[in-house]
Image 1 (cartoon, rainbow, N blue to C red):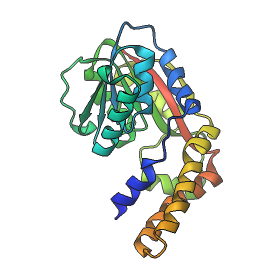
Image 2 (cartoon, rainbow, N blue to C red):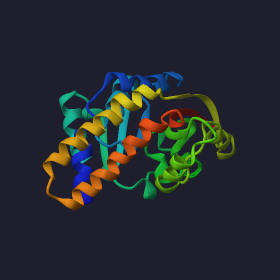
Image 3 (spheres, helix red, strand yellow):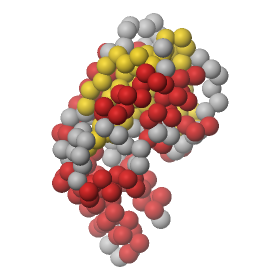
Length: 246
């Protein structure tokens, strides 16, 4: 039940949004101009950044994700956008990627590196980059170093590896990269593009599953995530980190 409900929540949560994609574009513009680069998009999901990278780079994009329904959705969107000839989709785990060493000019990860951890992801993904290739990561982070106990306890369970932006920056050079730039994602982006649509979707599903106690309990947990963000949004969010392989 939980897996089905999570899929129902997520399937309509990410309509293509030019406001959100401005951060993908900003990060891409920090890179030097590359001629038709080969890009690996790790944890591509339904693929807003994947499609945008295809438009921006004019290169080949390999999208990797474990969820076949998301890949099917991305495939249809790529076909509709006339980009399917430059987007190849692979179902697989980022924990067991078998791409050859130095396969890509750019490795891109928006909201997926937490699965392996920031420092571990930097270390493991480095081999995939060609000489002086580029890694771009969008990662959750503490925006202030002293979070209140309630939200600190929550994130300790959800993502024990969450660090401050400064803490993430300290990991870059030891893992073999040079920082080209970084920036936080504004609070309003998180609210308008994620938490508000999430709350609206939760309300819809609460009505749909009004007589299902297990579903209601699951949706209550999802709503708690929204409520905590309303209360503590000054303390946590996310940031982009743009790096070059050293």
